[in-house]
Length: 279
Image (cartoon, rainbow, N blue to C red; front, side, top):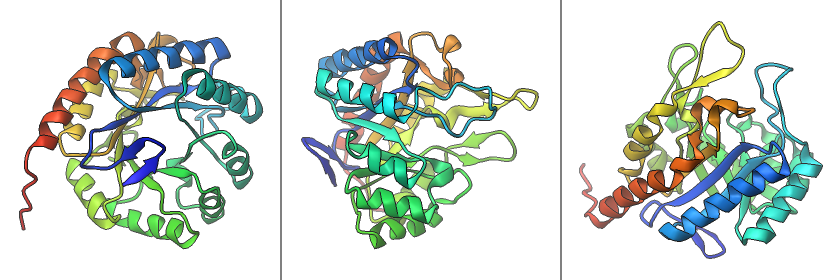
């Protein structure tokens, strides 16, 4: 179990939501989305952490929108945290960013492509924040134990493991639901969070931008929540087709309440059932 104030991340407890937006497009947009998340989660009784990126450093093209940068981005996240009384999470890309971000955010996210970078792991660990580790799409579930071991070595055991799909040939990802069970076993039964947004990314070979399978976002979330995980990672947008980043995989914001209602219903049901230990 990983504690974040009153929020307890645990694979056997009611799921928690890490939800928000892909990137801070501007202050008003971010506040409007955070306000909607707050209202919906309060109505449904779901504890959540608001997510937004200040810099999308890993973009396919140099022409892609990246965000406002760390200084302005952290300023907006700090305002969100105070205005809505909600914990916040963002991703970092360097040891220097980790130190700056830790003064504002409650959870630091380590991007999938950087999850084996030892200097970054050391810096992030020493912030003493809760860490959300995105599982690299090029690693097997078994190999995640080596990344966890690095974090332990540098003194941080407040870890969440975030599944976001595995490379399946070229330009495609697949989420192995059986692999989630392996993640639990290999990683000390740390809380597992399923990223139902980035797991749906795919790419048209003729395009420089990531595509996605937005229509299947509820399918993958239902499948994941049914096998007892600690949380769902979700990104939404009021008008996904106009989003500045990863719109094809984003949930339309006006569907958030019904989406979470269905996920909560499945989570409540499966976690009341006896877990059969089959050898």
